[in-house]
Image (cartoon, rainbow, N blue to C red; front, side, top):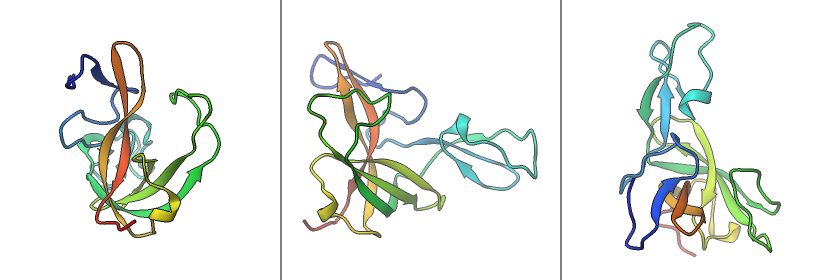
Length: 149
């Protein structure tokens, strides 16, 4: 696992969803016969035309375009750890560049719905979901690129 400049170890909040590289990727699946993609790898289901075919692990595109977005004005479910008072976040559905599939994720902190537009290009980033004395627990986020505020 990667270690930050601080003494806290950076670890995924949920294992197996993304890499911890400097340029992180979501870990998805590709169905060999159909060429279709799924995310997450082990929850993507199967191609009914090819029963029993296992998805091959692939790293998904890091960039995509905002397909839709909204404020999350209500507290999210686990694995999110809530702080009081709850601060709404911006959530974006992003169509990945190569796979042409849509993946939902939080937008990096500091962005509001007023800053974004459908079609804006974004890139995958990692952000701290919560932390304790020893660890920063990470999740994936979408960082807008070339967007004027």
